[in-house]
Structure formats: C-alpha cells, structure tokens
Image 1 (spheres, helix red, strand yellow):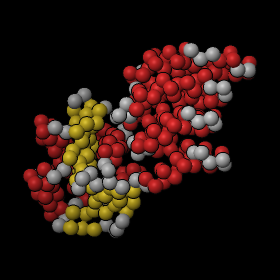
Image 2 (cartoon, one colour; image 1 turned 30 degrees about the vertical axis):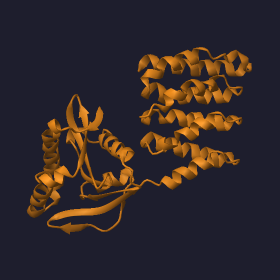
Image 3 (cartoon, one colour; image 1 turned 180 degrees about the horizontal axis):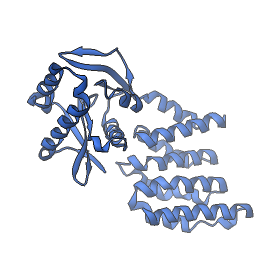
Image 4 (tube, helix red, strand yellow; image 1 turned 60 degrees about the vertical axis):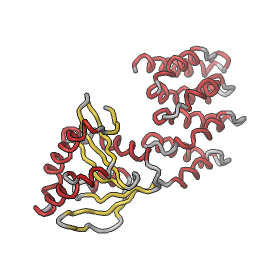
Length: 294
C-alpha cells in the first residue's frame, strides 16, 4: 500500500470513494438536509475542491482511502477509507503522511459522530460538544503536535538519571513509529552517536535508525558509515542494542542493506567475554535473516 498525492486524473475516482463511504457510514446519522449540505458545499463545490490538497492510499493502483487538507495543511477537510479496508491501519498511514508534511503545530477537524472515536485514537481531543449546522452534525476537534514535549524528551536523553533518560528514549521511539515529527531532530542523534559515553551513543543510534521510515532527505545515507562504527563498540551491550535497532534501516532503506550486511559480517564478537559470544552471534543472524526476507 502506497500513500501519495492525488493527481487530476485520479480525483474523480477519489470523490466517488468519498461519496460512497459517506453515504454508507455517515449519512445515516444526518438529516436529508445534512446530506444535501455535504454534497453541495464540499464534493460538488468547485471552489471548495480547488482549496484542498488530497492524498490517497493506493492498493494496486486503486484508491482505497482519501484524506484532504485545507488552510495550509492545518485542517482536515475530508477523511474516508473504503469499508473493505477498515481496521487495516490505512487511516493511520494517511494521517501520518499529512501530519509529517504539515508545518502547523495544531491540526483541526470537524468530526462526524461516526468518526469521533477514530480521531480519538489518532490523538485528537474534542474542543466543543456536538454541533449542528445546516443539518451537518459534527464535533470540533484538535490535534496538538507537542513539539515542545519532543524537544524536552530529547534533552532528557542525556540526563544522569538513567531511568528518566530511558523512558524518554522509549517515548521518542514510540513517537517515531507513529509519526515523522521526531525526524527534524535527526542531526542531534548523529551527534549523540559520537559521544564518549556509551549509553548516549546507544540512545543516539537507536533513534537515528528509527528515522529510517521518514528519511526523505537521505540523512541516514550520508551518515550510515560513521554510525555503523558502533557495531565494534567496546561495550558488547552497545553492539547488541545497535544490532536490534538496525531492523528499521533494513526495512525502510533498501539501498543501505548491503552496507549494513557488510558491517554486520565484520563484527568481531570474539573480542568480548565468552558469555557474550552466542548472544551477539544470534543477534547477527537475526539481522542477516531479515535482510534475506525483505
């Protein structure tokens, strides 16, 4: 499944999906006036359609989901996924795409009653009770990127209190799995890998690898050779964590698989104490097996 901007040649197909999904899942909650208002003021309104930017989820070149943004990417105007593809993570992928591209700190939406829980799962909060305008029932909602929180978490990575630092690492990894909002700080992780403190090196490398999914500027490609030096770190625990972190690079950066493979083959785990040999050998096999599978 691929998410990309919808071109002119695909807009008709996209709008057919919007109407079909709307009529099946949302229209039953609206009055006849509301259904007519939606059609007249949105999908059949030329000025409205020209004011939005649409992205689609494509399955074998067929559009199975649509998200459209207004107001410079700060407001979700349309968000529909084909019923056959519900609960497959497509809506989440669509949202992550526009979230990554939007420069706004907050995103808003007027959710239908049907979609309210979907938006809650994505991290939106209600800003007012349900309202009705021209027959359209909706709940005003907002999503806050919390950019300040991300910056704070990154600062915590180098705290002396290891429990706080580790919790910050886990939270940043979780955010990185879901959105590209941490990617803006990738240069910080590159610098952390050069630290003389092994725990900081490891945290930096783990978060460096987590950005592979979002690496639109190929920053991993530019820094991968230097970063992979950690695979011969003096600390065997650093090597083991680094090997585990490489799974994201292998999955999302196919052009770097040979580089990773070569570096992994060159690990000299016999330099560490005997009890670590079998553990590191197992970690190496897992990375090499993943490279074969993807």
